[in-house]
Image (cartoon, rainbow, N blue to C red; front, side, top):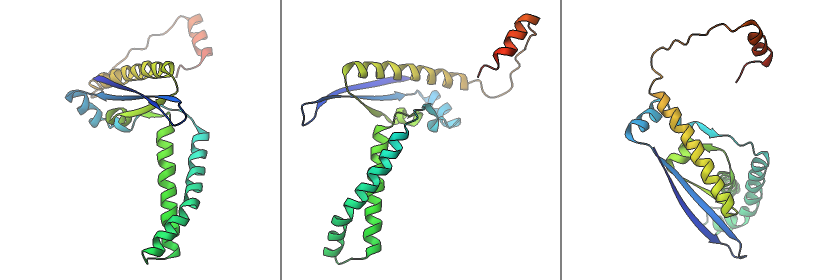
Length: 179
């Protein structure tokens, strides 16, 4: 499995510099077969809870739907296909699409399919870009080991569990299960 990186530096209209890191994993044919066999593409590598992102995405969808009513209304009227339901439906669809695009660009949750297809990560500084790169390398290494262990998932395995000395068993029980 190889991890590919592409780095870009962009300056916006306000002379603010942003950095973009593109990352993609390229599994070999055996790894790709295991990923497909065990349906790992939809597996979540990193979960990031972002309640404000969901709220902002919904808000953006709502605002854009309201704003889109006017141009959609003008287009529908000029095309002589005027129907209030069609105008409303088109405006809602535009809002939903814009909210979805905003959500997918801002989310920090990373799925296996993101890295299989390649994904861009926006960073505010070179330091953040370097950290993101190291982080992606770490989770890719983790995923690589999961794929390697999948070679041995078929069949049955026996793991002996030996009893502990009484004091060690007591400490172990009080510490709770390690999950």
